[in-house]
Image (cartoon, rainbow over all chains, first blue to last red; front, side, top):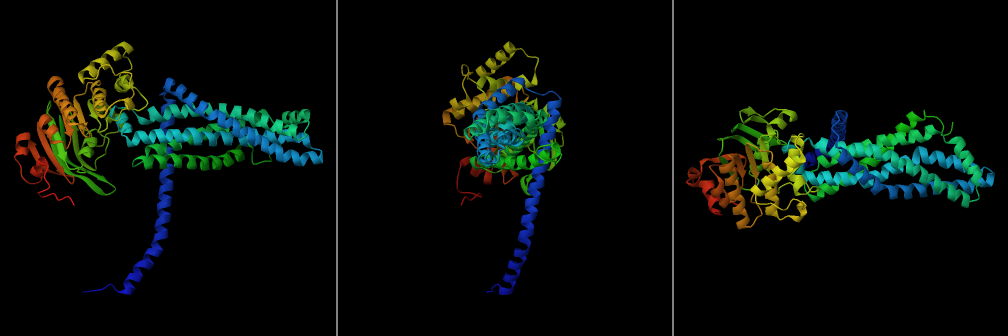
Length: 279
Length: 248
């Protein structure tokens, strides 16, 4: 009877210890580039279908209502309180120095450029993005996607196109309402903290330009594309049963939010020329 | 009508179908039988172009579908109806919308009245009249499979692919589905490939049969030839634990 030599065993362990991290990095890179390639393919194919006019108006309108209705209350509440909390911190400091009225400018710029677009996108990713991923992944595991193909229907045309169009049209509208809610929240908190109403409004009007508002809304178009593309990609690649559906849903929210924040930095840099916030 | 030649299908380097060659004559039914995981449903998806084979050829109505683009495959799929194992009805659509789904997209010139007539006719054919407004969640397993069949039939296919149409059904409903498959062949002249491991359905619906085991064909012939075979085929048809296949 032969026994394994300790040296041999030790050699294997050392080799594994060396190759394991390399393999892990390789797998992670493979998954990353796989994700990039797949999302790029889905986005391109969906865009081509949209440009060819393969849009089901009825489905799109229904989805717009669904995305808007499901997200609006959460968007309004989160942005209103975020505007309020900025106002709260700011007013406590600037009122002492006699610059209380500038709360209007800072709250306004913060809300329309950053808080409203970002929080709108985050809420829609969590609420509608997860729903899209759950729906598509459930369809995948129950062979409904195969059934679409068997009926000679392009799954992207049926699933991705109306969702993409609905999200692209709905997010700016939600962000616009979020702008109002955020400034409204900031205004009332400022007034409660002894900022003069007229001063708040005057600095807001002076410093917040139509360009700030427009750029903030334009950002949400990019975020809408990210949310839907990631949700569709995660939904279509799912494997397994209920566990796979849960994973796809979670991944959609996490990936969307991470990409939204990275993209937001790039867009902010490009749109506002890397310059100061007020200028 | 359907001919597969030396079909090989792999997933992540694992061979699922190994050198499969079969043919189905027009207006007949070929039944694929075998243990769970033998590759039966995989073969069906290869025939409908849902799975891309590694090598070999699959001729559907004289056209080799291997290597076709999705757009070209869609033209072939217009001749092929597929009935899925769990029916795969669209959850968010009611029965009427499910059955009319392909029709609406394939033939956009049809008027709503014409669509309604076709849906009604096909629901009657599968014995499911009067459930148009129900959602899939309100249907039993047997009803779902009938609706799935109606959804395939509205496209007026020359070929029907049935994936485990009687799985999970009680014996009476299973017999009714098997008789429906025979009806489709006899009354509509449909060419069918049936995947099942239900011996009663095999007996009722098959003209020719193929036994798949671990991705390979281990028996192929007419119903009579297959029922006369020994080895794995005999063990399977008798549902015996005694034989070449050992389940541990």
